[in-house]
Length: 300
Image (cartoon, rainbow, N blue to C red; front, side, top):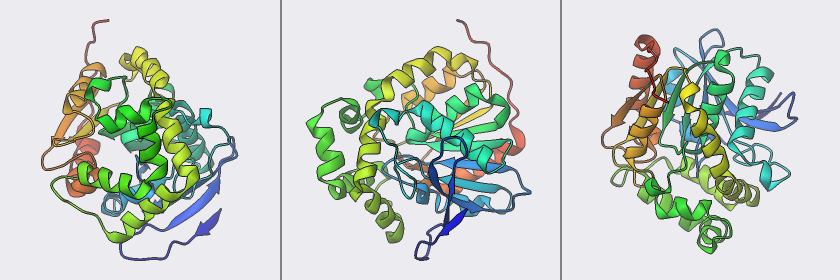
């Protein structure tokens, strides 16, 4: 295990790297809190990296052992050799291998955006490894009617618009994402923005971003067929003013999962974990302490 020091400014999380035992991938991660406490694995979205948890993770570190990872190809994690490998199923394998490598037998998973479906797959395929799921503003089912034009473009193979957004103008794309993704002009620390922009300029990240979205649909359809089997207690947090993914999808996720509840966060957009970190922490703590859940009866 080797330490990789970001220049420590204000809110940046300290990072390390580890090589996964099975997949033989170098993964960058941040670790906060005591290992004797229950573990929470944090899974970021786009256009982000693990620094997206700059506010949530420190608030939870007094009671939990936090591990935030960069997905392959993002942040400081090693890219994958083939574009076809960037799938939700493979990312789920990364999570399990990371837990094994770090000798974590069981953890809660907190995931946002593209991290939502891998988290669900881990909960579905390895229920004994996941205590609870907390997810935010993601797309586990193929529902283009709930997606913004940007997300529809990303998912369309050969889309010139998606190529422009992801590859040609990463800074402009980030400005669009942050202007539209946060609630009414909310902003984040400059050093966090710069960490995201460094990713946006990185060719490996651009390939990972585009490939993941364009490999997404089959993974979504596969999960939807089995969603009723996911019994891990699940808290769905959704920004009331999300302009990338319609709130109706949050309601549908709640309906389809047998052991889930939805909590809508007011004055929050798509990046609810950065818009309202203290609200996220409050709902997470309450969920971990109180909500045991009783599976709903689903008519098949």
